[in-house]
Length: 216
Image (tube, rainbow, N blue to C red; front, top):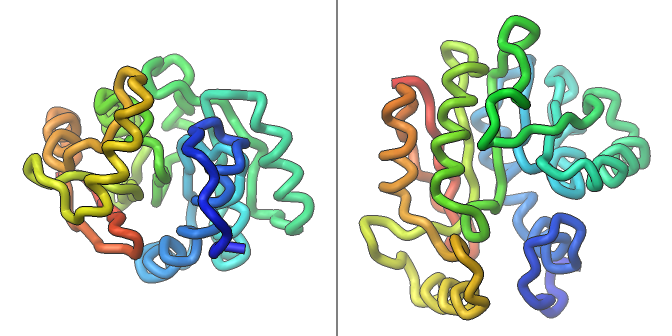
């Protein structure tokens, strides 16, 4: 149930909190993806975690091949179990991608992507990860492809709502280095040297955004 009490914040991909947040946001994200995705092609998810999102989206895009990935191989079983339970023949076996290590990135000679998407990582990841996402996108995106980044963000140093300010305070209270809401402008700065620019900022429920980046 999406209206259950929120579990304590825990960014581990298989935690109760991540599952709760995923169930809460998957349909608002899907609504935009249904407007933006091509009719057919290839989509790469970064930081797929448990596989909740990719396996929720896949049935709605039967002509798109979805490639899940994560830094942590321990989550791969969860991704494939959800794939089999849903009968998602268009979801590939998960692969390991470390956004700080280009040696782990897929080969552009083998496949390029119409869409690269990542959901809810920046509040618990360094903003430098944006550099890796942009560099990977510059390598793997098709010429007319795009990157979709979902989550809560500040804009020009300011919180967009009081609830996001309170959420950030809760995250920062954990005193974990690099945790906290990031600024959209910092993501733009990280992406620009790779020729990847912000094209659109789309409001979503619960004071989140989908940021659409593409080649400049």
